[in-house]
Length: 340
Image (cartoon, rainbow, N blue to C red):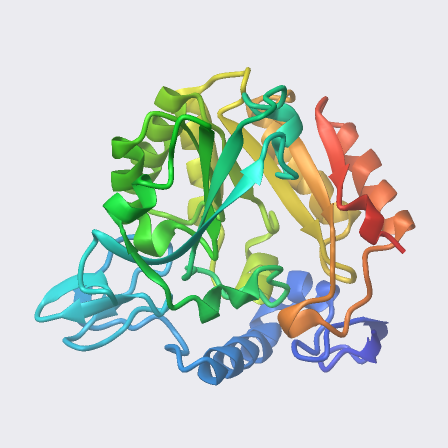
């Protein structure tokens, strides 16, 4: 939607909820921040979640938000809570999570499927494990309905979904992070390939365990690099991407494997915000580690707080594709049926 930026007054492709343009986010962040914070507070309030990470009490330590919760207080993710002086999931136990499971026939439509160890597998299935919480508050969230997940399952119940025809598990959401210990316990009980789809904003301790689980099982970690610029990440997702970028480097250096790759990166091409400049910076960051790391650019479907924006255009998509290919050798464009 072409709107007038509430800071600079220029008319650009701008989300109604955010109300500010990419240039002001990048170049005038101090003035943009109050608009950004108000936008995320309003969305969090709508879903009865904390409007900002609490800063007093016992530390959670799971992610970039560094929540500290007093007794009875809930973290920014809405999932982790101080119960009687101990930070645990809302379920009361790390052994129970708000999660939904279903099967996909292999090969699936997974973003990283063409790079996956199961890309040539047929007549078997993937177990999709969809967690109902997230550490980010992405305005463009394509799976925003994770907030509606109310079904609770124990570790053993999720593990029981695997059988002789299950080749792999994929954890996603939302994001597995707020209920990460549940996911890790499931992984310990099954003998299949374990893959993760995540924003990568978890702590370094969790990064080590996620990396080892994927490496040992032959799985892949697909990290959503929403942005390279910290200011843009905060604007779009409500949180910094410092952990995401540092964990990406850490996992690559600690668990490097080329085939199947330990890491696959993806970026959603949000019109007006994630442009070829941003994609170039992300691709350059990845290439500094290894230019053969797969990178998936995804067409945007108007959703959640940015449903007033258009679908990604073909021009936008191919400009970003060409920009990424200057740095990386394995770049693909996904969701191309959405391009306008």
